[in-house]
Image (cartoon, rainbow, N blue to C red; front, side):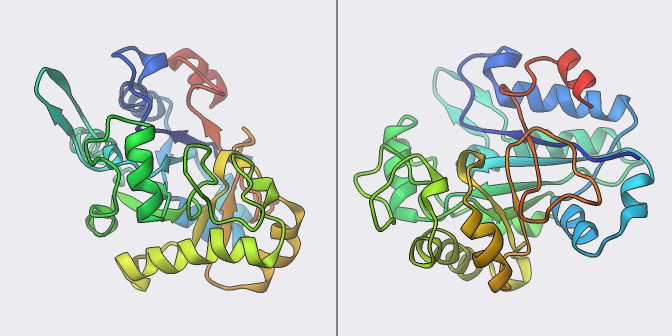
Length: 270
């Protein structure tokens, strides 16, 4: 059975020009490795649909891989150009160039799981990067319309420790497993999903959710997600392949830098 690896990258991770310290460099090289090993890149929406519909044969037929990006910094979609600093190609540009070089296959696409709160991302732009206005939602709709990057839900504010306040009844930080009741799930997941749909339109919404840092609580798996319809699948960072028996609320992903640090390690993982 050809179970499916989903690979995850962070566009904020670009400390220098080396593979281990720059997810943009890693993505460009990894796309080539994936192609050379005979894999076809499929959308996370299709993976979720096939899983929910119980299409076991699809998982068995051919080599497939998924790509996702976490947090939703502008560098997912917009090249970073700044005086005195080498241009940083966005993940969108890297994927577009890969697709141009390989026109015989279906275009590679990815899902960007975005932190939804515009207030939170404005603060994170200051606390996590250089404060140049590089973290906002102005690109989401264009990305979704491009067909190369879907927009997924990565919570309202990630319970990020650098924020002055977070949407949580107990003001918990940096531990999404503490989203363990209807009130907190509504603030972190439903509020984010509603805002994403208002911003890009229901027709472009994926209904996909990625747990911040891969952490979750049994309440979400057994009560919250089964009791609603907007979210149809949720993703962890558990570092396993996806198979036809995977729990739709616990779809695993591999994270660049955590589960592999070179093209050789990726080839072994695949």
